[in-house]
Length: 209
Image 1: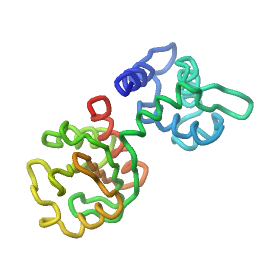
Image 2: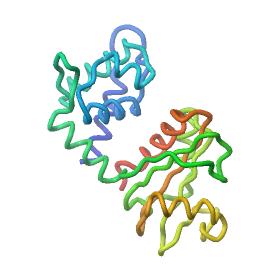
Image 3: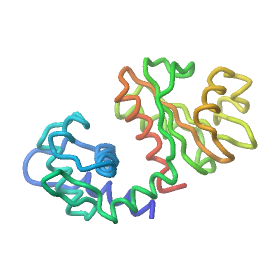
């Protein structure tokens, strides 16, 4: 199911249409679905939330509707049963996304962390996640795996709590990871980019967990 959801959003994002190329990404589509799951939302509000033009917001709504993920009314759009089910699969894996304080491994003003359940076996060096975050404008990302009862950073630290005690204490308190969970932290100059960097990095794991 997760694999199908990822394929569907990637297909929607890549669809070509007459006129200028779309100015939105998979991350915008995902956020649009999260917003539609909460309450009806119109095009103007979506444009403001995603910080994109109204034309792009209109295209997002149109494509999500054509894919059967949302339904529209005078109040705005909401997720369909299909949309809610697919978003639910995403949220089973990515259960927490929180803003955290300054983080000693990333030189950035703003940092976000996300918890990916049971994805530790898919992490190699963490470079793929870092590159995905940087690509969308974040300063970087650090991938941490909860393995054998402790936090580790592949190729950097086998004992995160020993090497970075302050950061480890914060992560354990806020995210409460379990065996084989992954925590990805991304930092940027703005909160929006830090959050988007975290989601972009996590997205690389989505259909593999």
